[in-house]
Length: 126
Image 1 (cartoon, rainbow, N blue to C red):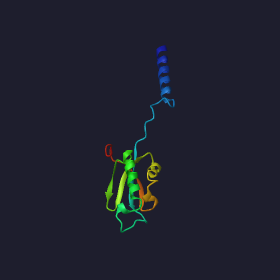
Image 2: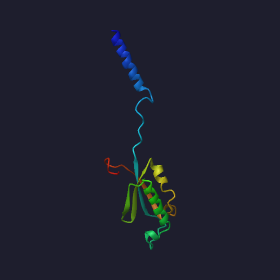
Image 3: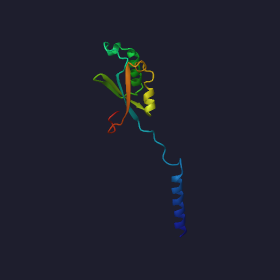
Image 4: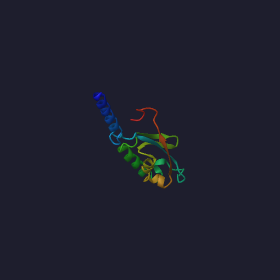
């Protein structure tokens, strides 16, 4: 009988320790979040100029190069008359902030759309 009581006390103690806040498993890093940034022609786009002749194009390209070097852009490209990159960020606010200094957005040569992107399966984006 004493052995049974001792066993119940030990099990109860172990259970209460497992339920103590902060004593459980370590918090995991939040999952990566991705956002699609779509660049389209803005109201200040000059129709008779090529994209590389538009105001702020060199600075825009430099910003994208910086983001690629920082491994924030896993994929990007052009389609139709738009450009698209997928960026990694902790939330939408951070994703937007990656383009705060983009001269083509500031001068409204480009307009920006931002959408959360949720890959279907692990490995869709490395």
